[in-house]
Length: 244
Image (cartoon, rainbow, N blue to C red; front, side, top):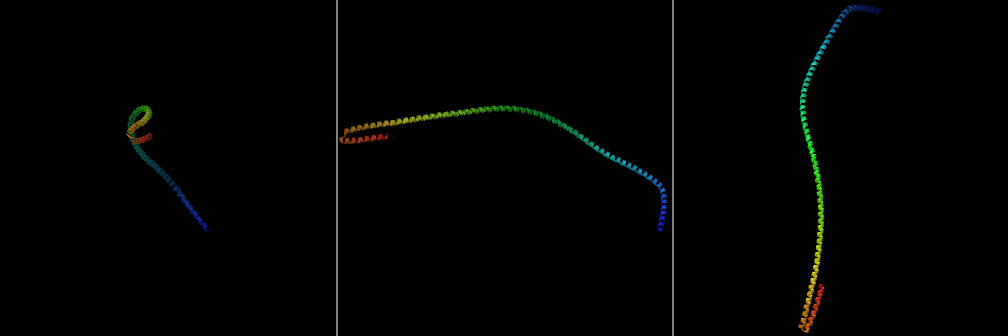
């Protein structure tokens, strides 16, 4: 069968290959081992070098960091020095301020003490003034009361005087009225007496005239004159009665 022939040929070839591979493998294994050992050594050497390089880089890095830290420390130290100097200056200023504050505090204490004394003196003066004011108020009240009493007394006196004056005026007026009435009555009485005297005188004269006429005239004329005289006397009496 053709198929079987091919498989035989393939198996032969494979065997040959295996033989070659086996021969090659034995020779190459030794070289491979030596190469592996060399490579391993080289690898180890590279690792050692790499490790040393890493260590060197680490050292360089640490040195840089150390220098950086030193620089930082130097800067910080300088800052600290500056801060210390500033602090010393501030302490001096603070001490100076403290001295000034102490002096100012002592001055203020003295001023407070002085103000306390002044306040005490003012309180005493205020008390004295208050007492004086109270005393003056009492005096003013007493004076006002006295003035009011004097005013009341004055008003009473004035009323009494006015009353007395009014009574005097009324009395004087009454006296004047009475005197006027008396004078009027006297005048009326005097006038009446005068009139009566005048009437009596007139009558007397008329009587004398009548007598004289009676003697000197004749009977005719005497009668006429007598009638006329009688009429005149009657008229005189009428006038007198009318006036009264």
